[in-house]
Image (cartoon, rainbow, N blue to C red; front, side, top):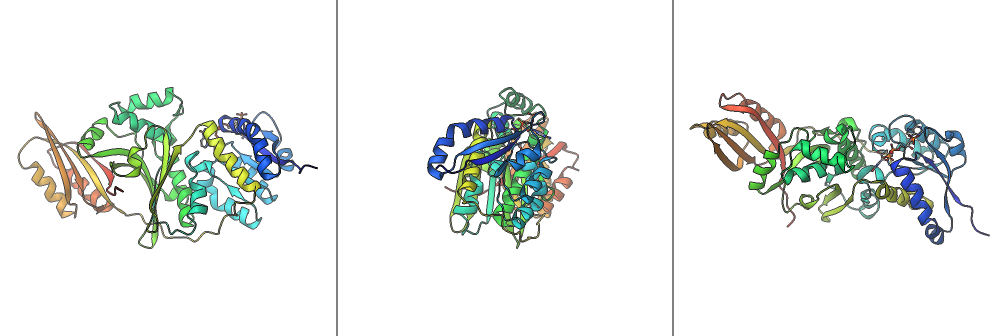
Length: 407
Ligand SMILES: NC(=O)c1ccc[n+]([C@@H]2O[C@H](COP(=O)([O-])OP(=O)(O)OC[C@H]3O[C@@H](n4cnc5c(N)ncnc54)[C@H](OP(=O)(O)O)[C@@H]3O)[C@@H](O)[C@H]2O)c1
């Protein structure tokens, strides 16, 4: 006699939900062959069909692919309290209510899996939890938003921000309202989840400092190329001075950094640790079928008992003021003494210059420099003072630079 089917209640049947349904149909024979039980969809809930209570009662596990905070939060809490395992791709929910959900899963000794919430099909959650579970992680850098990486890739090839965004919308990478992506908020939510996973400390979306790519100019990418730099929206989570810093900024990278070559809509995550030097995972960050494959991987992992309930958190202090190198772009009057005045002010704030490119353009000049490492607060103060000079013609632009290369 064959074993009972493994019943999956599916909340949401949109882009990812319908792809999950299709993928499960294609893969269920194989999954049954390896695991002894056949996964089946026992109920579906959308806005127009299904009743949550019925879907919950008829399922061994719930897959949540609705998105948003409510009613997803309420449904997942009810499922966990009813002793059901849960798989979700919902980064908004986990980055804002993760502790409540993880705690509920722990109390009820059930699994809460979320591979697809971080970097689409890139299996970074599993690698951090399993392969690297004995490795003390020092730092994670991630390109975790495919839309902005696509836009920056186009800008590096000469498009303006507006042209690149329009193309991202045309090919379906960017939503009609792209604000969560281009503001850096989507990446910040994913970095909050990744930081919690890597460092075991509760990190809320509100703890993550972020800036988007809306104010970048194609010109910055051109000058940076002369300095050997490429621009990415980089999320960072790192141990620092006994605490933890989590942030997302447009950031320049030198060519030898593993994230420098990640182009188009791909995502990638670099994990750094003394024990392993660095390890990079990359792949498609979104797309219905790609995301569905990560969701199905979580389902199979729960079916086979491989995934553990979440571990209790241990809070680390959040560090706000961190060190970074900076690219600084100044639009100045072309007259003697300008460079000297700028470097004097920078020096007074402990900002030392690594390289400078100067371009004369008639009456005006562009002064583009890269600094050595400096505390962000010092750089901010220096830039505010430089902006006061009467020869500075438009607001200075300071962009962070990651100096490490792994060659
Ligand atoms: N799309 C991607 O490439 C991608 C990648 C990674 C992660 N994700 C995450 O995956 C999740 C789903 O994304 P998606 O792109 O598949 O979204 P979607 O296409 O908008 O689909 C959402 C589905 O959820 C249903 N739904 C929404 N609110 C509901 C409610 N209050 N009650 C019942 N059903 C409700 C919708 O019902 P109707 O059909 O009735 O409207 C629809 O079937 C999100 O958390 C998203 O962040 C998506």
